Image (cartoon, rainbow over all chains, first blue to last red; front, side, top):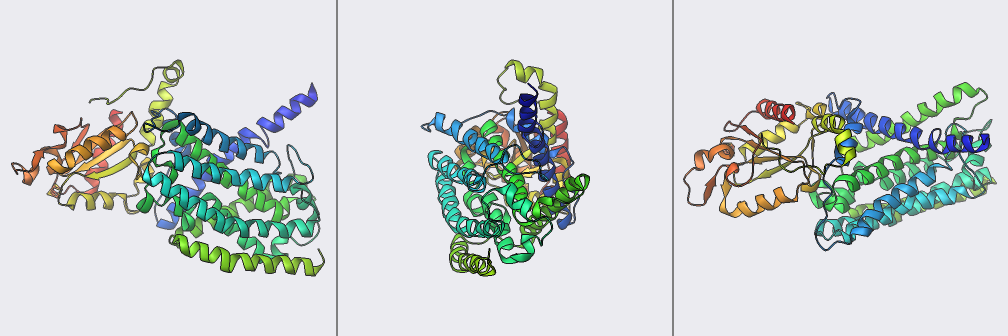
Amino acid sequence: MAELLSALFTWFVFPGFIFLLLCTWAFDWLDRRIIARFHGRVGPPWFQPLADWIKLLAKEDILSTGINERLAAILPMLSFAMVLAASLYIPVAGYTAAAFEGDLIVVLFLLSMPALAYFLAGWISGGAYGIMGGNRALLQYFSYEVPFLMAMVGPAILGNSWSISQIAQQQTGTLWYAFVQPVGFILAIIGLIGKLKRDPLDIPKAKSEVVGGSLTEYSGRKLVLWHLTMEMQAVLGIFLLINTFLGGAITAMVGLNILLFFLMAMVILLSLSTASVIYARLRIDQLAYLGWRVFAPLALLQIAFVVWMGG
Amino acid sequence: MTMSGTTSGTLLTRWAAPMVRWARRKSPWVLHYNTGGCNGCDIEILAALTPRYDVERLGILKEAAPRHADILLCTGPVTLQSRDRLRRIYAQMAAPKWVAVIGSCGCSGGVFQGGPNVMGGIDQVIPVDVFIPGCPCRPEAVIDGLAQLLEMI
Ligand code: SF4
């Protein structure tokens, strides 16, 4: 009984669903607030994400005629479920709901499936903008995902494990992998920006070009699920980077860990917000060029360097 | 005020009504459509959305897709050409939705009144919740009008 209760606690409260939802709320608000401060304005109040979610939940849910309703309803739920499943394996300051050898690969898979669902959602939505946004999303996926995956191989080789918690553990007492392989770290951050479709790489949902991208035709509950998926992906992506590159904030002092973890998360969030403020949107061909001719070779060099160092 | 469209009256929505009402007042997303004005009002709307006025403090975000928006900001008189498009955009928005008319043209036809291709104000075509007159109206007036609309929600 006690085991079941503790399992339920880790799945649903900490570091599970409720904790993640609160993090999503906080990160979303902080992100908008930081961007507002960069613009020299005040920004939204702290309850803004919650108000947005509730409002969207209570809005009418309409679809265009001729659209496959069941698929349109399943896709956002499926991607949200994937992201939540990935959260089980990502440790928060050393606490994790589950772990096994090879969970890094599972997490990377689960975090990249929403991109495919996003493409499909645009494809079936029956609007020209949806189809165009979906195609762009897929093209962008091929550009950022390969360097991102290769950047993730570095820590796995150094940590001698495919388990995220193991990789984080390996870094206690040694130099964090972000300092050993700075190129990989930067590539991973760029990959994360691409994954989240955030500002310099928001090609699939550029408002002035393809209106709302894949989500143009969706409203109400489906839209809020998509938003939540994206925002939670941001939180998990940041947590993943902390674990693989910044040692998972595991120190000798247990009380300090959580504080350090959130400090690191803030720093990464700040860098993401800064990037979205100072860079203008790339064109899709520029991104493909960068992804395949610059980022992928750099990531290969990084892996070669890691292997040469002796793993 | 005409409350355009009703939410489905399930038990949950009735129970959570005050919270939903609060959320709607705190998170109005606007969509901007020019039905045939001179563009003066549109520039004032954009000015109201710039960092200087910071309408994100009220939760106002500019959306590009009608499906995502709560408030339709219309400028200009309704021309015969834009009439059907205006109707269609209004129909594409998900309920509950509100319409704010910006500028004298949209209120009554303004300087274009009586033109052969002009139907008159926006309220000839779709139900309107607030009129914000001015030719063009200042960004402060736009924000004031939207704040009054939020009071009515
Ligand atoms: S009200 Fe004046 S400024 Fe606005 S669209 Fe009409 S003519 Fe132009």
